[in-house]
Image (cartoon, rainbow, N blue to C red; front, side, top):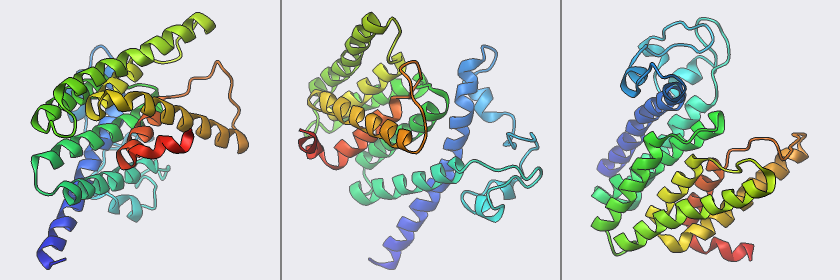
Length: 265
């Protein structure tokens, strides 16, 4: 690896950290947009300035340097000393890795931008759903549209018909499962956000990987519940458990190794 390429990849990673800081803003503030009729998308993500969720003090630039500020402040607010969620540096680091991986895998191409957007949307949705049980249309709908658009520009992997059918199958497969669950239990087992998320994944991976993603996602969810139960967390059928993160993990697994389903059979 030459000095020029090393500098390029370091720059890409640092650039990703900056975007990761912005993603943290989206993760925190988009649910506020959804839960408030008075706030709009652009005003909520733009105002007010970054502030501590605990003491509400505005943060200066020195307190907002990706990764470094969190480490320098030892994970605590400069003003009130309350803990800052580990999610902030984690999202920044993961975003840096997403940028690095996308350009390393696909080079300086339009395809790398597509996959960069794909992984970034999934990262944002993962943490929003994990924290608030929401999968906002702000991200699920673009995931579907961009997936279909990619299939038209790069049809050798997934052609447009496959992509569109994948989106349709992704939506209605969970919709049908939810309808059956509702007949049995009288309540919804999934939300419409889950339907649209799986539709987006279907648009990216094609119809033939929709059911495998559901199977792997279900396995991920069950394993997670089992592990949490072992360490003392109690679960009941009435508890809400976000399924979006499990689907996202499943899609990453299928991206890395589409044959992983053979291990579950």
